[in-house]
Length: 376
Image 1: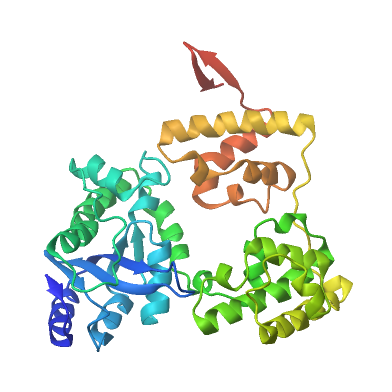
Image 2: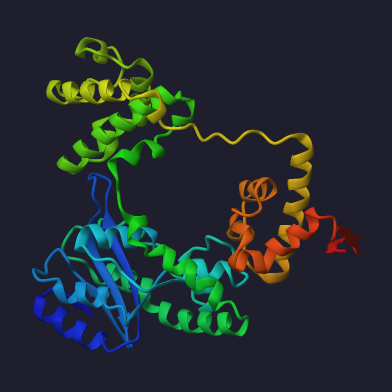
């Protein structure tokens, strides 16, 4: 059903609130804005599927209440962007959450499986891709668009039920639960402008002093982009920001000598120069630290190669995706400091950490039988 009035939404949300589990998806646009523009919210609850139009509906409070209800589990597929969009668009933090993409990585499917592949694997249905580039902000929406949108939640409740059964059967629900809780942690979704420099491309080429400039300059860009609701790159591209941090201009004339700064107004240019000056004046002990991993020695690289072979063997036997258990950086951390490693506690220790620890102690090894790796 397509809901475009406040009364329709209130009636649907009242029914949906009695469900213990609902499936949720969103359609949004952000190509021309800083904040994503919420265009549609799809919900499947107790056999009903609704496409909710937040553009036409004046009072979205029933939807906010439903999504905020902690007695109702919200099922998403790859929920990262959806949670951000709902927080920006509706001001709501969804909890508790179940992410079928994350759960799939615990159940023998690849770590970042697409929704279409998941539906085909669990339901034997091939979803059409015809509306994948739709402009969801244009009205009216036609029946084909609505069917496509509703398909994004149509199969999730059934997949959720099957996944829960598999997780219980494999005794992995306790492994998955903390990972799901981490997804909807409000701290994870917060945006601090002074952290924007951490996402600056090519920031690895900057010195600590230049990173201090980047911290202030990128915070300036975030604030300007948010205030005008423009994409960051429309204010200044990453390439331009890196060059500004390297040259640290002190006047508008010097700033204009950097290619790509012509779109920055004189007023904005002056406030950017103030940000650059703040970064340049940052005390040395307060400049951001450069987090570059020292290259392991050849011997350590060989140890990590052996550990990774064990990790892949554990992944193959358990059906839990290798990258979900640990990356090569995690393995290096485990070699260097076992106590503080992610592999040293919880389900990761139970699944792989204990075996890797025994490997490092020389208590287990690897061999090849009939062309396959096996633990000794």
